[in-house]
Image 1 (cartoon, one colour):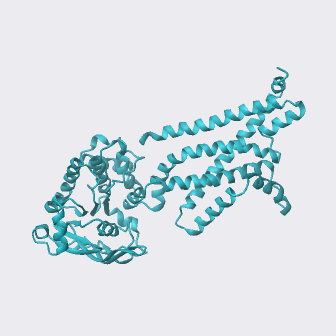
Image 2: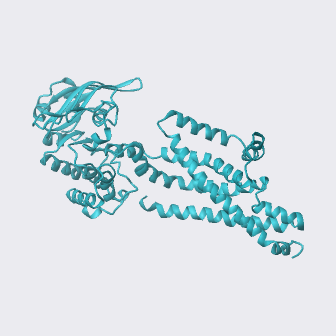
Image 3: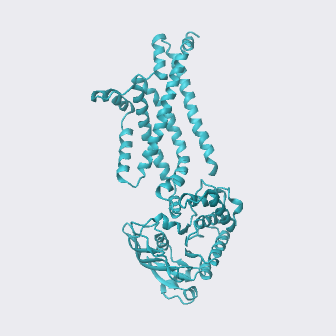
Length: 250
Length: 219
C-alpha cells in the first residue's frame, strides 16, 4: 500500500468540501503533499486554510471529497482513524498542552496509551525530544509554568514522540509574542533540515519564503495559487494574492 | 443545668452517638453510590449516543423535579403495594443516592463541558480514542472543577439524610426524637444533634477542600 517513491504524494485531498451548517468553508479543494515536502498554506483569516489542514487528519470530517494518506483513503468508515493520526503529528495555535500533566508526561501519554510503548522507552524518547527542542531542564514542570514559546516547543516534541510521517502546523506562532516566534520557528527550521514532511498554516512570510518548497494560497474555500516561494512572492499568479501580499510585511 | 436538660443528653448520649454512626453510615453509602450515579449520568449526558443522553436527561429531570420525601415514601410505602417490600435501610440509601446522583450528574456534565475543546482535539490528534481522551485528558481536569460543587452536594446529602428518619431508619434525628419523647428535653437534645450534624458536615467539607488543594498542583 505504501508508496515510498520520492515525490509520490503522502497526503492527497480530492474535491474536498466542508460545511458548517449552511456555511461552506471549503468549496472543492485538491491538494497533494509529497514525501519530504514542506508546504506553507497561507491566506486571509476565514479563508478556510485551518479547516483544510484539520480535514487532513480528520479533526474535521469533510462533507464531501476524499482524503488519501500513505496510499489509502482515510475518510472512510472502515478506517481506524486513531492509527492514522499517530502517523500525522499536529501542532495547534494555542498549544493545547495537557495542563494536568508534567511536560514529560505530555510527551509520553500517547506513546504509552496509543502505541503501547513501555514507560521506560517512552520516557527515554521524550527526554531526547525535549533535549532537541531545548527543554530538557523542564521535564518535571507543569505547562502553566512555561512561556508560550516553551509550550509550543513541548507541543512539537509531543507530536514528534509518535514518530509521525507528516507534521501539520496550524498557525503555530500566531499566539506568541514576537520574541518567542523566533524560537519556535528555529525548532521548525530544524525539522525542515531533517527532511520532515510538513504542512504549515502560517502568517510568517519569512518562514514560508525560506523554508517552504511550495506555497498554496487559500481564499474563500479554494486554492487560488500554488507555486514555489520565489515565484509566489516575485510574480504572484493571481490578483488576489498580489492584494494580500501588499498588505502583509514579507 | 437540668432546666436545659443537659443531664438527659448525658444519659442518652450513647443512643445519640449510635444515631450519629447510622447517619454517617447512610450518608457514606449514599455518597459513594450517588457519586457513581453522577459519574455515569454525567458521562451519559455528554455521550454521542442519543438514547443515553435522553435517558440521563430524563433521570435528572424527574428526580430534580419531585420532592425527595415523595420519592422516599413512594419507594417505601408504594412499592409494597405492587409486591416489592423494600427494607428501610435500602430505601434510605437507595433514594438518597439516586437523588444526589441527579445533582451530581449535572455537576459532572458541567465540569466536562467546561474543558476547552482544544484538549480533546489535541488528544485525538495524538491517536487517543474518544474514551481515552475522556479518561486521560478530560476527566482528570474536570474532576478538579467538580470538587467545589461536589463538596456542596456532599454536605447537602449529609443533611438530607435526616429525612430517612421518616421511614424508620434510626439515624441521628430519629434517635433524638425517641429521647425527646421520653424526656421532653427538646432544647438540649436538638441543640446537641445540631452540633453533631455540624461536626459531620464540617468533616465532609474540609475533606473536599483538602482534596482540592492537593490536586491543584498544576494550576
